[in-house]
Amino acid sequence: MNFRLFHLPQKPLLDALRCLENPELIAISMLSSKCRETVKSLNFSLKRFVVTVNRDMSIHMVDSVDSRLWLSVSGIVMPGFRLNKLQVITIGASYWSDWKFEKIDIRKWIENLMSIYHCSEITSIDFQRTDLGELEDEYSLNLVRHALEGIKISTLNLKKPMNPDGIAGKYAQNALELFSKRTKYLSLSCNPYQGDDRIKIQKVLMQNFNGIWSLGPFSIDDILVTNSRTLRLTRSNTGVKDLNRFIKHWLAGSNPRLRFFSVCQKEAEAETLLPKLFKGIPHITIKKRRLYKTIVMGGEIVNVHNNRAIKIRRKDGREATI
Image 1 (spheres, rainbow, N blue to C red):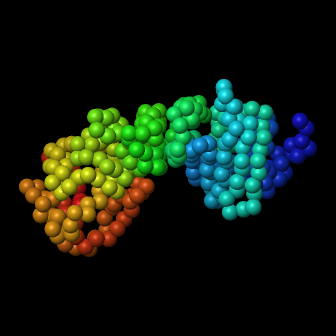
Image 2 (cartoon, rainbow, N blue to C red):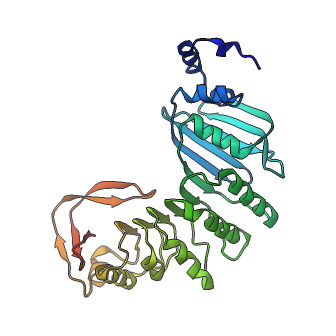
Image 3 (spheres, one colour):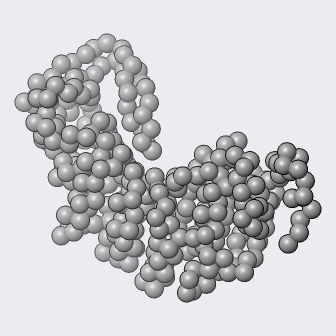
């Protein structure tokens, strides 16, 4: 193909390309290796690159100026996972288009996207499973495995509750087995393992994650084997006695990588809980308004003011603030 635009000198060419929208730049980058390198030289970057897996696979991109682009993949051809159709939506704008290809390998297409935006890893892979069948589940997982094999992934996110005893639970388990060892962060809407399979979720929790966020439920035994730097549980099966046990184990040296731990406890008011929580535990109460670090949903560490805190110290000298 001969495009007159690319006959321009380098500077006016790049100035012209900067006037184009993200979908147009992506389309140009797919024409040839020279086009790809030219678009790449614009030095655009992404804040987020999220792969979502549902009935189809889609990609949600947010660039450095907060422009949002949704790329919905459909019509994947077996065998070889060739892409022949793509729906492109620019969120917040009136851009909506269907692209058709001559069976481009979806893996090469994703690599092209990451290359032109200088993206070293995928921000998150989100599994939003609906009511698929077993064959569709197998196809979906094989597609994602092929598309993302060897690519770095920051977060694995299982977004919808999945009955551990049903097909959806097995789907979630397979997703964990495929991707948990490749990610730094883990977000779970539920625990996909129950009953005799608890040892399996504990093997996942033992991995060296930077952060785990979950709606639960997790038992105190699950928490004690967790090897993450941060752990936030929105719902938990742990009572005050369990948390007292956890603190005693931490004081004795368990969970050595843990830096931030958050769990919601709704049994009673704090004044009723605290004596039970710290029974048999040496601690110091600080009744002074101060600024403390805490972890919020999504794993972000923020500073908050509080009028009271409790300090504990373990044998190796490390302190914790509650």
